[in-house]
Image 1 (cartoon, helix red, strand yellow):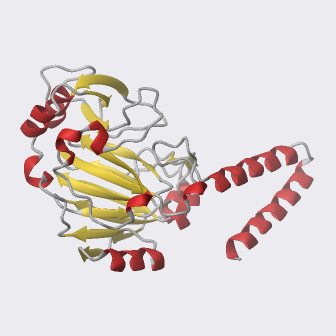
Image 2 (cartoon, helix red, strand yellow):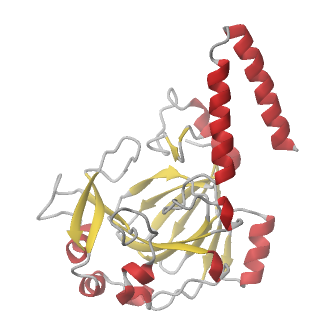
Length: 312
């Protein structure tokens, strides 16, 4: 376990101008209390959502355990009518199941295009309930990217990952623990793409992940009405302490041309970064044909050049 743990900084809801000043100067997670999120906090009960969205087909993750791993794929995808999904997700033990009677369910809403070519937008995919929720005015309308409904059983834990856009996680119902790690500690998180290979951050195997203990963590627990700002590149994982409903809102905080136009989830690396990483991989491949002494020498030169670029 990481030895350095701090609480996420907490504010009463602030103005857009104050928030923009904070994120320009700090680029750190921020928990906002008392934000206006509309009527969803009162209206979005299991019965209400089942009635409003009953026959909508949704594709959900089903897992025999709460700790879901995208890298190990310890879950399966199933399609259900929304009313069946949400009642199963809210139940502790199931009369009907796919894997086992205490299986866990998780929905991350997606776009309407079955080929996966459009982004999630609550206004398009769930218009009957879109009017119930208000997004705090923290960013410019033209920078909006997506709004993602997330619904999970108690105990569902989502793999540690990062996104390339700023986002706010709005907790509508239930309680959710969130753990975050700074981009500065990326080299301690054993990444595979945008995801950490550490399956359980609370019980890591020190023989497999010896440097993880050096990573500093921020933690908070979201309750109904809370809004958590998660800056781009901050690694994060969530754990549902109870059945709950939340909405993520992503927006483009950099010039729009830097983002991959095929990205529908907000997690594809920026175009300049993708090119740079590809060039680094090509350089490593080129050096691999050299004798070890030469390869080590030029890798050290490359590392020194990257360190100089980092500090410039």
